[in-house]
Length: 433
Image 1: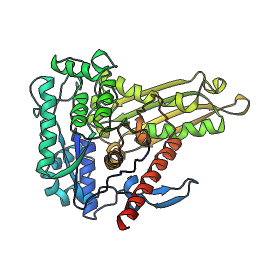
Image 2: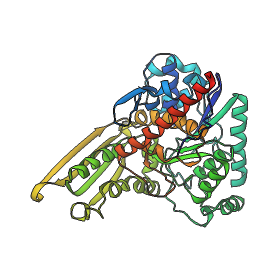
Image 3: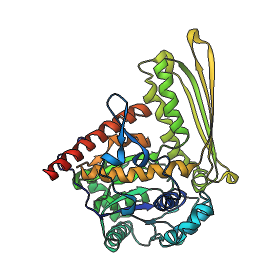
Image 4: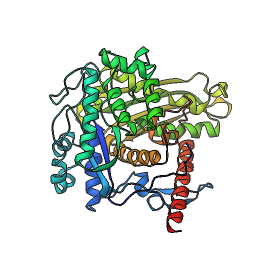
Protein backbone atom coordinates (compact mmCIF):
# COMPACT_ATOMS: atom_id res chain seq x y z
CA UNK A 1 0.00 0.00 0.00
CA UNK A 2 1.14 3.55 -0.72
CA UNK A 3 -0.09 6.63 1.09
CA UNK A 4 -2.38 8.80 -0.99
CA UNK A 5 -2.16 12.59 -0.68
CA UNK A 6 -5.58 12.72 0.97
CA UNK A 7 -4.68 11.23 4.37
CA UNK A 8 -7.75 12.28 6.33
CA UNK A 9 -6.80 14.24 9.45
CA UNK A 10 -8.28 13.60 12.87
CA UNK A 11 -10.75 16.12 14.17
CA UNK A 12 -10.56 16.83 17.88
CA UNK A 13 -13.10 14.82 19.83
CA UNK A 14 -14.02 12.44 16.99
CA UNK A 15 -14.85 9.04 18.42
CA UNK A 16 -13.60 5.72 17.06
CA UNK A 17 -15.73 2.62 17.69
CA UNK A 18 -13.78 -0.58 18.34
CA UNK A 19 -16.25 -3.43 17.96
CA UNK A 20 -15.21 -6.95 18.94
CA UNK A 21 -17.10 -10.15 18.18
CA UNK A 22 -16.33 -12.41 21.14
CA UNK A 23 -16.06 -10.50 24.42
CA UNK A 24 -14.11 -13.05 26.38
CA UNK A 25 -10.57 -13.02 27.71
CA UNK A 26 -8.87 -11.02 24.93
CA UNK A 27 -11.57 -8.39 24.44
CA UNK A 28 -12.05 -7.74 28.16
CA UNK A 29 -8.28 -7.48 28.63
CA UNK A 30 -8.09 -4.89 25.84
CA UNK A 31 -10.89 -2.79 27.29
CA UNK A 32 -9.73 -3.03 30.90
CA UNK A 33 -6.18 -2.22 29.85
CA UNK A 34 -7.19 0.94 28.01
CA UNK A 35 -9.29 2.10 30.95
CA UNK A 36 -6.44 1.37 33.39
CA UNK A 37 -3.96 3.32 31.26
CA UNK A 38 -6.38 6.25 31.01
CA UNK A 39 -6.48 6.37 34.82
CA UNK A 40 -2.67 6.05 34.96
CA UNK A 41 -2.98 2.77 36.85
CA UNK A 42 -0.77 0.83 34.43
CA UNK A 43 1.47 1.18 31.38
CA UNK A 44 0.55 -0.02 27.84
CA UNK A 45 3.39 -2.56 27.71
CA UNK A 46 3.50 -4.48 24.42
CA UNK A 47 1.73 -1.81 22.38
CA UNK A 48 3.69 -0.56 19.39
CA UNK A 49 1.41 2.42 18.85
CA UNK A 50 1.77 3.60 22.45
CA UNK A 51 5.41 2.86 23.29
CA UNK A 52 7.11 2.21 19.94
CA UNK A 53 9.54 4.42 18.06
CA UNK A 54 9.50 4.88 14.32
CA UNK A 55 12.49 3.05 12.85
CA UNK A 56 14.54 5.02 10.35
CA UNK A 57 15.65 3.40 7.08
CA UNK A 58 19.03 2.55 8.62
CA UNK A 59 17.33 0.84 11.57
CA UNK A 60 18.01 3.56 14.14
CA UNK A 61 15.06 4.46 16.40
CA UNK A 62 13.40 7.74 15.54
CA UNK A 63 10.56 9.63 17.23
CA UNK A 64 7.75 8.01 19.15
CA UNK A 65 5.05 6.78 16.81
CA UNK A 66 2.33 8.53 18.76
CA UNK A 67 4.14 11.84 18.23
CA UNK A 68 4.30 11.59 14.43
CA UNK A 69 1.22 9.57 13.45
CA UNK A 70 -2.36 10.88 13.61
CA UNK A 71 -3.70 7.99 15.69
CA UNK A 72 -6.95 7.99 17.63
CA UNK A 73 -6.32 8.70 21.32
CA UNK A 74 -7.50 6.49 24.17
CA UNK A 75 -9.97 9.18 25.22
CA UNK A 76 -11.66 8.92 21.83
CA UNK A 77 -12.13 5.13 21.83
CA UNK A 78 -15.57 3.59 22.39
CA UNK A 79 -15.74 -0.18 22.91
CA UNK A 80 -18.57 -2.56 22.11
CA UNK A 81 -19.12 -6.04 20.78
CA UNK A 82 -21.10 -9.26 20.73
CA UNK A 83 -21.01 -12.49 22.75
CA UNK A 84 -23.32 -15.45 23.29
CA UNK A 85 -22.74 -15.07 27.04
CA UNK A 86 -24.55 -11.90 28.24
CA UNK A 87 -22.14 -10.91 31.05
CA UNK A 88 -20.99 -7.30 31.15
CA UNK A 89 -17.28 -6.68 30.60
CA UNK A 90 -16.49 -6.57 34.33
CA UNK A 91 -18.20 -9.92 35.00
CA UNK A 92 -16.64 -11.44 31.87
CA UNK A 93 -13.17 -10.22 32.90
CA UNK A 94 -13.56 -11.69 36.38
CA UNK A 95 -14.67 -15.00 34.85
CA UNK A 96 -11.74 -14.99 32.40
CA UNK A 97 -9.24 -14.71 35.29
CA UNK A 98 -6.65 -12.86 33.22
CA UNK A 99 -6.54 -9.68 35.29
CA UNK A 100 -6.73 -9.50 39.08
CA UNK A 101 -9.35 -7.63 41.08
CA UNK A 102 -6.70 -5.06 41.99
CA UNK A 103 -6.73 -3.99 38.33
CA UNK A 104 -10.43 -4.53 37.63
CA UNK A 105 -12.11 -3.00 40.68
CA UNK A 106 -10.81 0.58 40.19
CA UNK A 107 -12.44 0.57 36.72
CA UNK A 108 -15.49 -1.52 37.62
CA UNK A 109 -18.05 1.14 36.71
CA UNK A 110 -16.56 1.68 33.24
CA UNK A 111 -16.47 -2.08 32.56
CA UNK A 112 -19.97 -2.77 33.88
CA UNK A 113 -21.36 -0.14 31.50
CA UNK A 114 -20.36 -2.28 28.48
CA UNK A 115 -22.64 -5.23 27.73
CA UNK A 116 -22.41 -7.48 24.66
CA UNK A 117 -25.01 -7.34 21.93
CA UNK A 118 -26.65 -10.64 20.94
CA UNK A 119 -24.16 -12.64 18.92
CA UNK A 120 -24.30 -14.42 15.59
CA UNK A 121 -23.36 -17.84 16.94
CA UNK A 122 -23.71 -21.43 15.77
CA UNK A 123 -22.54 -24.47 17.74
CA UNK A 124 -21.81 -26.23 14.46
CA UNK A 125 -18.87 -23.83 14.09
CA UNK A 126 -17.71 -23.64 17.74
CA UNK A 127 -18.79 -26.88 19.35
CA UNK A 128 -17.46 -26.43 22.89
CA UNK A 129 -19.26 -23.16 23.69
CA UNK A 130 -22.87 -22.09 24.08
CA UNK A 131 -24.92 -19.23 25.47
CA UNK A 132 -28.39 -17.65 25.38
CA UNK A 133 -27.42 -14.21 24.02
CA UNK A 134 -27.74 -15.06 20.34
CA UNK A 135 -29.53 -13.74 17.29
CA UNK A 136 -32.34 -15.71 15.66
CA UNK A 137 -33.39 -15.93 12.05
CA UNK A 138 -31.86 -16.70 8.69
CA UNK A 139 -28.26 -15.93 7.76
CA UNK A 140 -29.45 -12.93 5.75
CA UNK A 141 -31.46 -11.67 8.73
CA UNK A 142 -28.46 -12.11 11.02
CA UNK A 143 -26.21 -10.19 8.61
CA UNK A 144 -28.74 -7.36 8.44
CA UNK A 145 -29.12 -7.39 12.24
CA UNK A 146 -25.35 -6.99 12.63
CA UNK A 147 -25.35 -4.05 10.26
CA UNK A 148 -28.15 -2.48 12.30
CA UNK A 149 -26.13 -3.10 15.49
CA UNK A 150 -23.08 -1.37 14.00
CA UNK A 151 -25.00 1.66 12.76
CA UNK A 152 -27.00 1.95 15.98
CA UNK A 153 -23.88 1.68 18.16
CA UNK A 154 -22.08 4.37 16.19
CA UNK A 155 -25.07 6.69 16.26
CA UNK A 156 -25.66 6.24 20.00
CA UNK A 157 -22.01 6.86 20.80
CA UNK A 158 -21.50 9.57 18.15
CA UNK A 159 -18.64 7.68 16.52
CA UNK A 160 -17.26 9.14 13.32
CA UNK A 161 -15.48 5.91 12.36
CA UNK A 162 -15.25 2.30 13.44
CA UNK A 163 -13.08 -0.82 13.27
CA UNK A 164 -14.05 -4.45 13.87
CA UNK A 165 -11.48 -6.76 15.46
CA UNK A 166 -12.45 -10.44 15.74
CA UNK A 167 -11.57 -11.61 19.27
CA UNK A 168 -13.86 -14.63 19.18
CA UNK A 169 -13.11 -18.33 19.07
CA UNK A 170 -11.48 -20.48 16.41
CA UNK A 171 -14.15 -22.03 14.20
CA UNK A 172 -14.07 -25.49 12.65
CA UNK A 173 -11.86 -25.86 9.61
CA UNK A 174 -13.30 -24.97 6.21
CA UNK A 175 -11.76 -24.35 2.81
CA UNK A 176 -12.90 -21.93 0.13
CA UNK A 177 -15.93 -23.40 -1.65
CA UNK A 178 -18.50 -22.29 -4.22
CA UNK A 179 -20.30 -20.01 -1.74
CA UNK A 180 -17.09 -18.05 -1.11
CA UNK A 181 -15.85 -17.59 -4.69
CA UNK A 182 -17.60 -14.30 -5.46
CA UNK A 183 -19.73 -11.67 -3.74
CA UNK A 184 -22.74 -12.71 -5.83
CA UNK A 185 -22.30 -16.33 -4.75
CA UNK A 186 -21.82 -15.31 -1.11
CA UNK A 187 -24.99 -13.20 -0.98
CA UNK A 188 -26.96 -15.98 -2.66
CA UNK A 189 -25.57 -18.36 -0.03
CA UNK A 190 -26.80 -16.03 2.72
CA UNK A 191 -30.28 -16.16 1.21
CA UNK A 192 -30.38 -19.98 1.14
CA UNK A 193 -28.80 -20.43 4.60
CA UNK A 194 -25.78 -22.18 3.14
CA UNK A 195 -24.08 -24.25 5.90
CA UNK A 196 -20.61 -23.28 4.63
CA UNK A 197 -21.13 -19.65 5.68
CA UNK A 198 -19.47 -19.28 9.11
CA UNK A 199 -20.42 -16.67 11.72
CA UNK A 200 -17.05 -14.94 11.30
CA UNK A 201 -17.82 -14.48 7.60
CA UNK A 202 -21.12 -12.83 8.47
CA UNK A 203 -19.37 -10.43 10.87
CA UNK A 204 -16.78 -9.58 8.22
CA UNK A 205 -19.51 -9.03 5.63
CA UNK A 206 -21.48 -6.74 7.95
CA UNK A 207 -18.38 -4.75 8.95
CA UNK A 208 -17.27 -4.20 5.37
CA UNK A 209 -20.80 -3.27 4.26
CA UNK A 210 -20.78 -0.62 7.01
CA UNK A 211 -17.35 0.68 5.99
CA UNK A 212 -15.45 -0.74 8.99
CA UNK A 213 -12.00 -2.30 8.57
CA UNK A 214 -12.02 -5.95 9.64
CA UNK A 215 -9.04 -7.44 11.47
CA UNK A 216 -9.23 -11.18 12.18
CA UNK A 217 -7.64 -12.31 15.44
CA UNK A 218 -8.38 -16.00 14.79
CA UNK A 219 -7.38 -18.34 11.94
CA UNK A 220 -10.96 -18.55 10.66
CA UNK A 221 -11.71 -18.30 6.95
CA UNK A 222 -13.55 -14.98 6.79
CA UNK A 223 -12.43 -11.70 5.21
CA UNK A 224 -9.81 -13.52 3.15
CA UNK A 225 -12.38 -15.30 0.97
CA UNK A 226 -12.58 -14.08 -2.64
CA UNK A 227 -16.15 -12.92 -2.00
CA UNK A 228 -15.29 -10.64 0.90
CA UNK A 229 -12.07 -9.42 -0.70
CA UNK A 230 -14.22 -8.38 -3.65
CA UNK A 231 -16.58 -6.55 -1.30
CA UNK A 232 -13.70 -4.81 0.51
CA UNK A 233 -12.26 -3.57 -2.78
CA UNK A 234 -15.66 -2.35 -3.94
CA UNK A 235 -16.43 -0.55 -0.69
CA UNK A 236 -12.89 0.80 -0.19
CA UNK A 237 -12.46 -0.96 3.16
CA UNK A 238 -9.17 -2.11 4.71
CA UNK A 239 -8.80 -5.70 5.88
CA UNK A 240 -6.02 -7.54 7.70
CA UNK A 241 -4.57 -10.98 8.18
CA UNK A 242 -5.56 -13.80 10.49
CA UNK A 243 -4.70 -15.05 13.96
CA UNK A 244 -2.82 -12.82 16.41
CA UNK A 245 0.88 -13.73 16.52
CA UNK A 246 1.35 -14.10 20.26
CA UNK A 247 3.15 -17.07 21.83
CA UNK A 248 4.74 -20.03 20.11
CA UNK A 249 4.49 -18.67 16.56
CA UNK A 250 6.07 -15.42 17.70
CA UNK A 251 9.06 -17.47 18.88
CA UNK A 252 9.06 -19.57 15.70
CA UNK A 253 9.14 -16.53 13.40
CA UNK A 254 12.04 -15.16 15.45
CA UNK A 255 14.21 -18.30 15.68
CA UNK A 256 13.66 -19.60 12.13
CA UNK A 257 15.10 -16.44 10.49
CA UNK A 258 18.23 -16.90 12.62
CA UNK A 259 18.66 -20.47 11.36
CA UNK A 260 18.20 -19.30 7.79
CA UNK A 261 20.56 -16.34 8.19
CA UNK A 262 23.30 -18.59 9.61
CA UNK A 263 22.54 -21.45 7.17
CA UNK A 264 22.11 -23.96 9.98
CA UNK A 265 20.31 -27.14 9.01
CA UNK A 266 16.97 -28.22 10.46
CA UNK A 267 15.81 -31.83 10.84
CA UNK A 268 12.65 -31.28 12.87
CA UNK A 269 10.61 -28.89 14.97
CA UNK A 270 8.19 -30.26 17.56
CA UNK A 271 5.82 -27.75 19.16
CA UNK A 272 3.28 -28.45 21.85
CA UNK A 273 1.09 -26.19 24.00
CA UNK A 274 -1.09 -26.39 27.07
CA UNK A 275 -3.71 -23.79 27.94
CA UNK A 276 -6.90 -23.79 29.93
CA UNK A 277 -8.88 -20.76 28.84
CA UNK A 278 -11.94 -20.64 26.59
CA UNK A 279 -9.68 -20.78 23.54
CA UNK A 280 -8.08 -23.96 24.86
CA UNK A 281 -11.49 -25.53 25.40
CA UNK A 282 -12.54 -24.69 21.85
CA UNK A 283 -9.30 -26.04 20.40
CA UNK A 284 -9.83 -29.31 22.24
CA UNK A 285 -12.26 -30.04 19.41
CA UNK A 286 -10.37 -31.61 16.51
CA UNK A 287 -12.23 -29.63 13.84
CA UNK A 288 -11.33 -26.30 15.45
CA UNK A 289 -7.76 -27.42 16.10
CA UNK A 290 -7.37 -28.18 12.39
CA UNK A 291 -7.98 -24.48 11.64
CA UNK A 292 -5.30 -23.46 14.15
CA UNK A 293 -2.89 -26.18 12.98
CA UNK A 294 -2.97 -24.95 9.39
CA UNK A 295 -2.23 -21.41 10.64
CA UNK A 296 0.73 -22.57 12.75
CA UNK A 297 2.28 -24.97 10.26
CA UNK A 298 2.57 -22.50 7.42
CA UNK A 299 5.41 -20.34 8.69
CA UNK A 300 8.55 -22.48 8.31
CA UNK A 301 8.37 -23.19 4.58
CA UNK A 302 8.22 -19.51 3.68
CA UNK A 303 10.97 -18.43 6.08
CA UNK A 304 13.42 -21.26 5.35
CA UNK A 305 12.99 -21.45 1.56
CA UNK A 306 13.39 -25.23 1.15
CA UNK A 307 13.47 -24.89 -2.66
CA UNK A 308 16.46 -22.56 -2.34
CA UNK A 309 18.20 -24.75 0.24
CA UNK A 310 16.92 -28.33 -0.20
CA UNK A 311 20.06 -29.71 1.43
CA UNK A 312 19.22 -27.84 4.66
CA UNK A 313 15.42 -27.60 4.77
CA UNK A 314 14.09 -30.00 2.16
CA UNK A 315 12.78 -32.67 4.53
CA UNK A 316 11.71 -31.11 7.84
CA UNK A 317 9.57 -32.99 10.35
CA UNK A 318 7.22 -30.29 11.71
CA UNK A 319 4.65 -31.18 14.36
CA UNK A 320 2.24 -28.94 16.31
CA UNK A 321 -0.12 -30.00 19.11
CA UNK A 322 -2.36 -28.10 21.55
CA UNK A 323 -3.76 -29.60 24.76
CA UNK A 324 -6.60 -28.26 26.89
CA UNK A 325 -5.49 -28.21 30.51
CA UNK A 326 -8.00 -26.28 32.70
CA UNK A 327 -5.74 -25.65 35.75
CA UNK A 328 -3.47 -23.42 33.64
CA UNK A 329 -6.25 -20.98 32.67
CA UNK A 330 -5.03 -18.15 30.44
CA UNK A 331 -1.40 -18.88 31.31
CA UNK A 332 -0.38 -20.75 28.18
CA UNK A 333 2.83 -22.77 28.08
CA UNK A 334 4.56 -23.69 24.86
CA UNK A 335 7.43 -26.14 24.42
CA UNK A 336 9.58 -26.31 21.31
CA UNK A 337 12.11 -29.07 20.66
CA UNK A 338 14.20 -28.04 17.65
CA UNK A 339 16.66 -30.47 16.09
CA UNK A 340 19.29 -28.60 14.10
CA UNK A 341 22.72 -29.40 12.69
CA UNK A 342 25.82 -27.44 11.87
CA UNK A 343 29.25 -27.77 10.30
CA UNK A 344 29.79 -31.23 8.74
CA UNK A 345 26.29 -32.24 9.82
CA UNK A 346 26.94 -32.44 13.56
CA UNK A 347 23.59 -32.41 15.45
CA UNK A 348 22.53 -29.81 18.02
CA UNK A 349 19.29 -28.95 19.79
CA UNK A 350 17.39 -25.85 20.84
CA UNK A 351 14.83 -26.11 23.64
CA UNK A 352 12.30 -23.35 24.26
CA UNK A 353 9.84 -23.23 27.16
CA UNK A 354 7.70 -20.10 26.79
CA UNK A 355 5.46 -19.62 29.83
CA UNK A 356 3.31 -16.81 28.56
CA UNK A 357 -0.09 -15.26 29.19
CA UNK A 358 -2.25 -15.61 26.11
CA UNK A 359 -4.52 -12.59 26.45
CA UNK A 360 -1.78 -10.36 27.90
CA UNK A 361 0.14 -10.86 24.65
CA UNK A 362 -2.92 -10.61 22.39
CA UNK A 363 -4.52 -7.49 23.90
CA UNK A 364 -1.93 -4.93 22.72
CA UNK A 365 -1.98 -6.51 19.24
CA UNK A 366 -5.77 -6.09 19.03
CA UNK A 367 -5.46 -2.47 20.13
CA UNK A 368 -2.62 -1.67 17.72
CA UNK A 369 -4.45 -3.29 14.82
CA UNK A 370 -7.57 -1.24 15.51
CA UNK A 371 -5.64 2.04 15.60
CA UNK A 372 -3.46 1.23 12.59
CA UNK A 373 -6.34 -0.15 10.50
CA UNK A 374 -8.21 3.10 11.12
CA UNK A 375 -5.12 5.06 10.06
CA UNK A 376 -4.65 2.92 6.96
CA UNK A 377 -8.21 3.33 5.81
CA UNK A 378 -8.05 7.09 6.35
CA UNK A 379 -5.03 7.04 4.02
CA UNK A 380 -7.03 5.31 1.31
CA UNK A 381 -6.11 1.71 2.07
CA UNK A 382 -8.53 -0.97 0.88
CA UNK A 383 -8.36 -4.74 0.83
CA UNK A 384 -5.50 -6.66 2.48
CA UNK A 385 -3.09 -4.40 4.35
CA UNK A 386 0.11 -6.38 3.85
CA UNK A 387 2.08 -3.95 6.01
CA UNK A 388 0.16 -5.27 9.04
CA UNK A 389 1.57 -8.80 8.57
CA UNK A 390 3.83 -8.20 11.60
CA UNK A 391 0.86 -8.82 13.90
CA UNK A 392 -0.50 -12.05 12.37
CA UNK A 393 0.33 -15.76 12.27
CA UNK A 394 -1.35 -15.97 8.86
CA UNK A 395 -0.82 -12.72 6.96
CA UNK A 396 -3.22 -12.11 4.07
CA UNK A 397 -1.77 -10.50 0.96
CA UNK A 398 -3.16 -9.47 -2.39
CA UNK A 399 -0.62 -11.72 -4.13
CA UNK A 400 -1.34 -14.71 -1.90
CA UNK A 401 2.36 -14.93 -1.02
CA UNK A 402 2.75 -13.84 2.61
CA UNK A 403 6.05 -13.14 4.36
CA UNK A 404 6.42 -14.76 7.81
CA UNK A 405 9.89 -13.60 8.86
CA UNK A 406 9.25 -11.27 11.83
CA UNK A 407 12.14 -8.96 10.92
CA UNK A 408 11.14 -8.60 7.28
CA UNK A 409 7.61 -7.90 8.49
CA UNK A 410 8.93 -5.25 10.89
CA UNK A 411 10.85 -3.54 8.10
CA UNK A 412 7.76 -3.46 5.87
CA UNK A 413 5.62 -2.13 8.70
CA UNK A 414 7.97 0.72 9.53
CA UNK A 415 8.44 1.65 5.89
CA UNK A 416 4.69 2.15 5.66
CA UNK A 417 4.57 4.04 8.96
CA UNK A 418 7.29 6.40 7.69
CA UNK A 419 5.10 7.15 4.66
CA UNK A 420 2.18 7.88 6.96
CA UNK A 421 4.36 10.16 9.11
CA UNK A 422 5.59 12.04 6.03
CA UNK A 423 2.04 12.50 4.77
CA UNK A 424 0.88 13.70 8.20
CA UNK A 425 3.78 16.18 8.42
CA UNK A 426 3.02 17.49 4.92
CA UNK A 427 -0.65 17.91 5.78
CA UNK A 428 0.21 19.78 8.99
CA UNK A 429 2.61 22.10 7.13
CA UNK A 430 -0.01 22.79 4.46
CA UNK A 431 -2.61 23.62 7.11
CA UNK A 432 -0.25 26.10 8.81
CA UNK A 433 0.68 27.64 5.45
